[in-house]
Length: 407
Image (cartoon, rainbow, N blue to C red; front, side):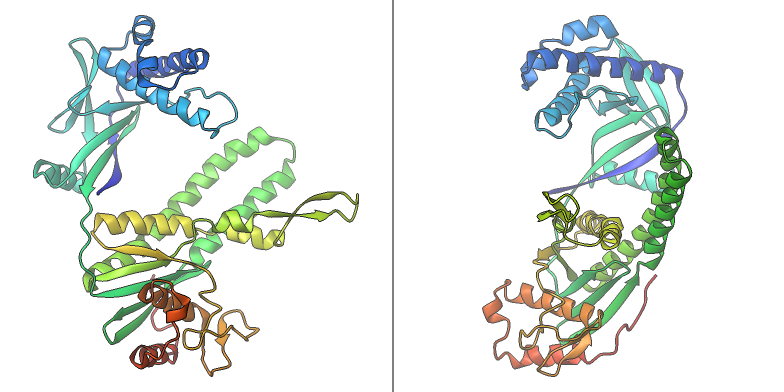
């Protein structure tokens, strides 16, 4: 299995490239208009209009072929119901395939402009980019499709994912303000915690800024859009930089100790919390959909970066050949890993069971994640008389928490 990664490389401004990108965008819109009338979604259908598009835009044969594939992908997405309105290509971008309509010439990317005419783009390469290109020359990586825009291009890199045989596990419990990790390798255990509070505070700050702008200019949605694009770009840059450092720390920990990463399956979390139930409206007495959770809790959970963190862990783990798996997220922080009893503590972060277990709920969740993996999520096997496992669980639950705070 191949793992795919994209790297961004800045390029110098080129007036011929802008002309080519405009022609390419015009070609995509022409293909979309033809497909709208044709209503077919096959490659042969879109290729039947290539001569008409070439005559109107002046694209080369190779560029028109790539343009038709991009237009067909947009149209298929529209047919699947992903968009309500018929799509229109607006951004200046094009697809380049090495060996077809593009070629590498040292530190330059050559793109076919027209028949026997080419554009040479100067790539601004750093040490990281040069290392990637040297690995590609050695055959350790493969270049896929390249997305070219007027200021930069994105190289798609493919690498074979061959996970190592794990010698232990690293269970991760991802929360709103921190990530708790429990590493178990044989009889040795170690507890880790990574702070997410700066990300939480950043999300709250920009949310309050957006709400203040709406109160000040309640009807100027055009202003909202212009200001939000600048604010959220700044917020995402700061948030992504912080999350990348944390995830790199997690991956290096797992790689260094040959651990398998175990996570809760949180893919359907936001869909579940936003699901509405039918209730009677106390004002008009009509049966209408209502939120299941209060507005403030919904806002906090929707702004949390659960899926983003897991996606980062997945592709970085594949890039470093670290194995990872998911287990069910059901009742991991509510169930006692010793006897299977339910939590009886009213305190949010504390777990208390009638069998005498008292520990942090995040640590209990990590233990249940490991137990679900060990028993293949069979609840009937999790509370058997395996005294060796129970002794390890007791030793971990009695550990003071948190042990370390990694930033």
